[in-house]
Image (cartoon, rainbow, N blue to C red):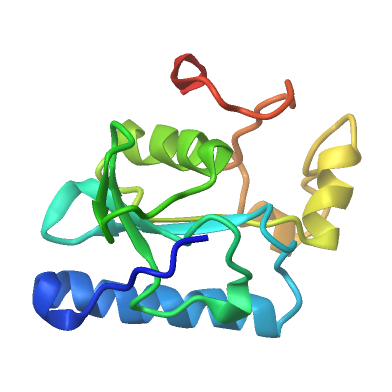
Length: 155
């Protein structure tokens, strides 16, 4: 895990605010018990650099993520900040695929909540049985698990 940090003078004001917001999101997800050690990720597109996004450093628990510890990475996988920053390769593949798809994907949350895992285990996927489920009608995408996504060809 990298110990290098990013300070406000190293990035734009817009990126720094995004870092603060994303770090708060990581901590909230952890607080509400929706983290899964180092196996899930939250990313946020850098507002003034749409080909870059922020992600937690490899090996960091959600409760330990700070604005200074987040890694800025581009869609090709090049780490911008901090120098020597490392990210989970599977997290990069999954999140970069979504960020590449469209400009409207600003924040991507990948968690392993109990409810999400239960829905994923259903052959039918999310069933439209009530009003809460209907919020997601025609808005849920599925990708069959094929092992860890480590190749850029999988995007």
